[in-house]
Image 1: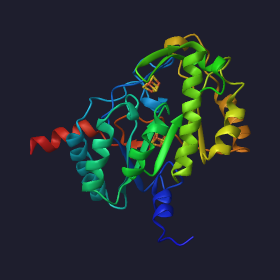
Image 2 (image 1 turned 45 degrees about the horizontal axis):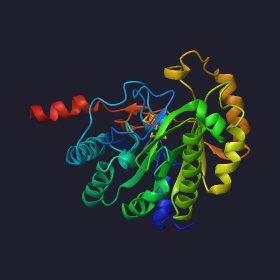
Image 3 (image 1 turned 120 degrees about the vertical axis):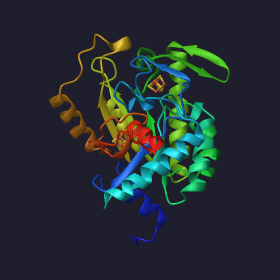
Image 4 (image 1 turned 180 degrees about the vertical axis):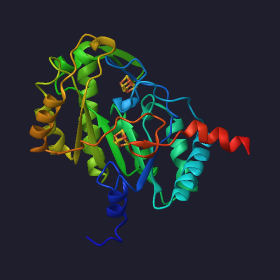
Length: 291
Ligand code: SF4
Ligand code: SF4
């Protein structure tokens, strides 16, 4: 494939989709506080899509503050030599698609930094209906968190969902969410997005569905899967988290079906810099204000 192909270039630059972790940086912009579902493991100390350690984000930004942060981090990284900010993502701390500020932020970022690869994490409930806006925003990579493959299992993980102005609980809510997630995945794959599926692995709750889920999402167009051990909080505070050996075994089995993102650091909703070498953004911003 010619390196001039913009899709391939963007793909190889994204540190979480096969890019160079040591050179390509990413920033998560915490502009999306609201959520339309309630995961049993979320005490809103998690980033949406469970991609964060507790602590999540120091504060919520406006779209304008978010653009200013991208500018600051981009310049800061360029001064380090050999490393560059390549990816701008929105991953919470709620569900980005449940927050209109998400698209306003992407629009401002795209205007100011046309070279950036844009990415988004979501629980998938609104994915299909937001696809026109996602395509218009020129988003390249998508992470969808899917934790159950059947309504019965979903009902043990999701406390409720809010959809079309109504609340649904139990298997009804879980069935709606699952159907929306899978339709959204198919629509996003059809639109040419790179798709990673996050899956919170909860022993005794959803571990029997993990491999079937890998098959299902691969068949619908996902390219990468990221299986994460549950952190015992909320509804699952008494669950024994899976051991490293169990995670290794599950990922090895799933790898036979779908490529696994083993490097994921479960970054905060306001992470910035190289994956695993985060910049202290608050400190940098305070320093800038001091001058
Ligand atoms: Fe929490 Fe994300 Fe689940 Fe919403 S989708 S409840 S923010 S983990
Ligand atoms: Fe990459 Fe995982 Fe961090 Fe997202 S949370 S930026 S996938 S390492």
